[in-house]
Length: 447
Image 1: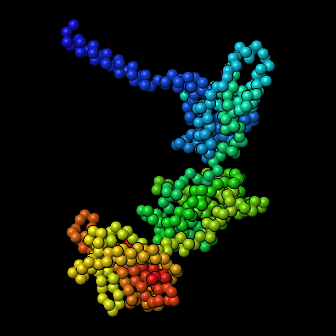
Image 2: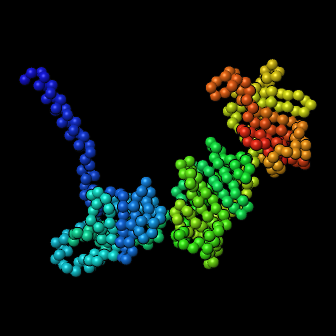
Image 3: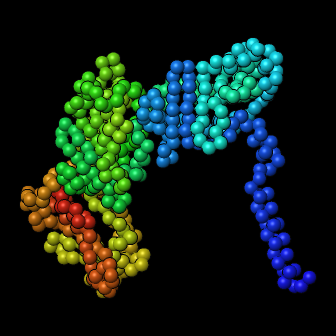
């Protein structure tokens, strides 16, 4: 045998060994194989049909969500169905009564409740098992009789799967209005008796863009959204194709629409009247699901929302990481320009003499924590009334670049200005302009 033949045989041998090793790795262990052999069913997850007496429930998976197809088309409770599938996968045979034993006693199937079983489960898909018939509870606690439609062989198995499916069709419906999360929402359009409000998310923060342009309070906006994303359906009332007058939804009292970056149409929730008997509930129509429901009356709080309720009451808000310059202009006392060098601050217009860096940082933090007590005007048209035509103090916050780059020009770039005018008791009038937002006049208790 020459060396070429030897090399070829060696390569073939290594290939065979590698293949056998791969097959071995793909095979279940002896213990796992025994466990799988004891499983009642092995199946693919894509469609479920439950026959419960005269009621038929059909559910199908679509885009990782389960939907009811029969007897009503609606969003299904994902967690409930996933729990059923998990129970099915782990459903074990605790005993077997052979078909021969059943044939020996013709009354056995009636005794087990399996001759004309009312509760049946059909799993549809590749390698699907025959329809599963559920019988009576066995004498052993927590066990019941089960068989497949095409076989008289009967199993003893746990009752968990029966409990998962022995439900009315309504019980499979998802009681959450929507599967949206707060983080997914990028726009909110609110319509109330007082008017319309439009909020949009810019980066990590919310802004009011209608009926005025102003910063929104992130937490309050998220709380508003959460009233929809956490709402639970109390009653399934009707589809929304019929007469909506009985529910006060032909002319809703208000509505809120949640948008995501991908969904430009949005999910619309309309708010109607209260049921005559359930005064703690409110009729709503959720357009994306096409139904009328009742939800807790607390949803009515949305209708009382006004722009001022959602406005950010921080006097000024900016990113301190880009803060390089602070200009303090006190009327009649000249200017002080503070400059940051690393983590320390200097007085730039005094030959960069060292400043008290700790005090500068405390001052910036205090200003950012300052809250507006009242919004006075959203258009800065009457400055003398508030002493803001000639402010007694003006603060300008800037970034600074030493040279031109593709993103910024060299020099100082102001991004926030706060002016302080007349004192009014414990408060002082202030005018703030931040990040391109329109100037606003507010009253703040600044110390």
